[in-house]
Image (cartoon, rainbow, N blue to C red; front, side, top):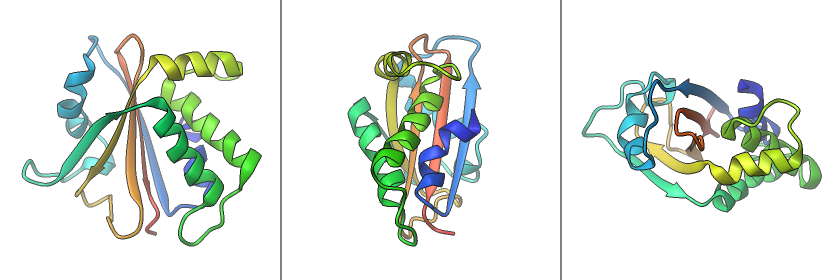
Length: 157
């Protein structure tokens, strides 16, 4: 699962990526995710103090797709990425992992999982994010609202 989630970042040759998946005991409504996410045990939010910046917003699936595709196909500051078809493949793999589609799922099944998920984009002033070149986080809340998958990416080595 980790490898699928970080596919776009690795294909783009970015500096570092982290991936986490949490299965929750109870369903959580999307409006509770912004408060929950910085409390989860993830390196990308370790040491984040309540007074420090943590910005998160719900985003359409299409915006997340574009971000992952740009990450993979155009690469980071020090890499040229994998371009066209391979960029789409890496972005698709990341979307599949984040949305919880089963390994080997058909394109239709991945799309169904992705469309039914609630997508978030976030940025933070935690130490993991260098905030020097490009940094971002993506979180996906599953349709049953009991699984949160997170991708954190930084282009700083």
